[in-house]
Image (cartoon, rainbow, N blue to C red; front, side, top):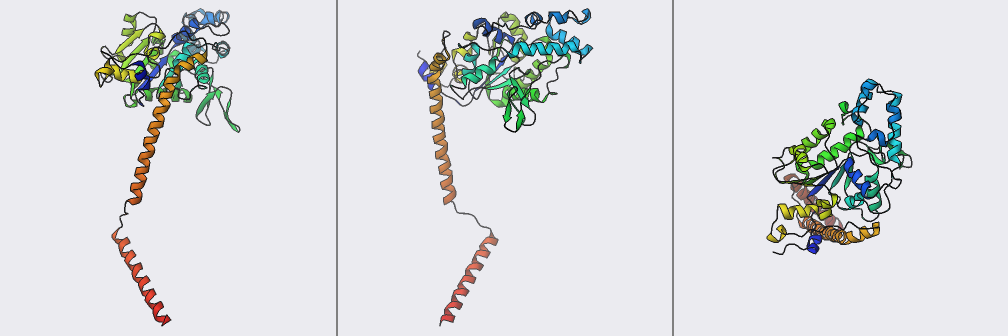
Amino acid sequence: MTGISIEEGINQVYGGGGHVVILGAGASIASTLRNPEINGKLLPSMDNFSDFVKLNDLIKKIPEKLRANNFEKLYGNLHSNNPDSEILKEIEDRIISYFKDMQLPPEPTIYDYLVLSLRGKDLIATFNWDPFLFQAWNRNSQFTKDLPHLSFLHGNVAIGYSKEDKQCGPSGMYMRPDGGFFEPTKLLYPIEQKNYTDDEFINIEWERLKSWMSKESGTVRVTVFGYGAPVSDVEAVSLLNDAWGTPDDRAMEQFEIVNTTPEEQLRKRWNGFIHSHHYDITDNYFSSSLAYNPRRTGESYFSHIQPITISEAFRHSNPIPQDFKTLDELWKWHEPLIEAELAKKKKTKGKLNEIKKTINIKKKTKKRKRTNKQIVEYWKKRKRRKRTRIKRKKRKK
């Protein structure tokens, strides 16, 4: 049976059906393996973090009892022992220095594909410190302004926060000529004390994610890309779980995992988020819903999970090619999708204007109801005017 064609799918644009993407270190590692960072820097995991960021000379100065192979555990031990130690400050400075200078290469990366695959109704939330997501969002905004919202759950080297204006922006910049400095966001938290509500900026970022993941938001898809839900970050997983609800609460939504870990382990790890068979697991971004139906992940969900017609149930995917060499080529491929979205907005705006005109006409033609008091006053005024006219006539005679 012939289903919805690729062209028909492109022209099918819904306003709802939000998609939330949660990024962990694996997403940035996958991006740099495919398209190396411009200066050749590699993305570390928590287990090889000290080697990559060159912290071993500092670790040698740490007492044996405080050392750990996992960086988060190591940092937690140091913080518990002395939160004001010089070694901690030096570690923080080196981490900021290592990540701050990172840059995306000029060719399209997984991050460019990712930000263009979603729209303003969607959200990308990242645990990563590197600036890749912000850089990709920034350079692709030259092509379209309809890009997903962003949340930085652990802070970010590219993002600052103005407490005065309650706004975030490029770190080290100003929001306005007379102030609103974007202070660099905090990056490091001891794992035993990761209270996300203590920091104003982090709390705002988490509240945004929780709102987007809630049942009331209308979100129908969640994709977890490269985030392993580490046991060391119990509070983060708990916050995600509370926002999402139980599997029975989300009986129709689709949960997707992009990770190289064996499927059996991933299914067990994310069991509290998955209802029955409503999940997908892949080890490659280009096999995910984001790459199969860019900018139409919500529409694809409704066609396959809640189809209205038989044709919708057999909808054809619109997979994006993986071999673009320039951003212009990537943007060119997305043009039909963007044009369909703009046409939809124009049509919707036209309908809203017609409705507003109809309402205004009805308001003008509708007679105002008056109270008894207003009616009495009206007739009293008419009588006074009548008496005045009679008096004037008598005077003239």
